[in-house]
Length: 120
Ligand code: 5GP
Image (cartoon, rainbow, N blue to C red; front, side):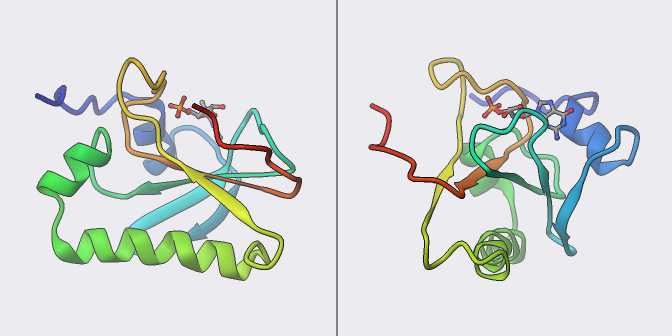
């Protein structure tokens, strides 16, 4: 079972404006901001506004509108930032084996350099 959502996680604080972040995009369903420790020239984090721990939690509990809004936001960000032609990578870590650090669903968008083969 998924862990209960922790309202004090760092991305919850970012959503509430309690911790500053550099916004890339926002709408009713999603907020996107630059990763504080970028692993590529472009490293954006996209998070749903709702309180979801991970992809499995989100897909189980979120409404169809929330899911559609979040997915559309990720694609919108890729298009609006010129990432489509050169290419980009999406990554969502979930749980211990994936080293998920922040227990609020986030999709990493990596771009701006050749990204190499996918990690095992
Ligand atoms: P995870 O390992 O959970 O998939 O990734 C968490 C990401 O959040 C890391 O890439 C880390 O650099 C980023 N991060 C952690 N704390 C903060 C913060 O306070 N602000 C921002 N912008 N990014 C953060």
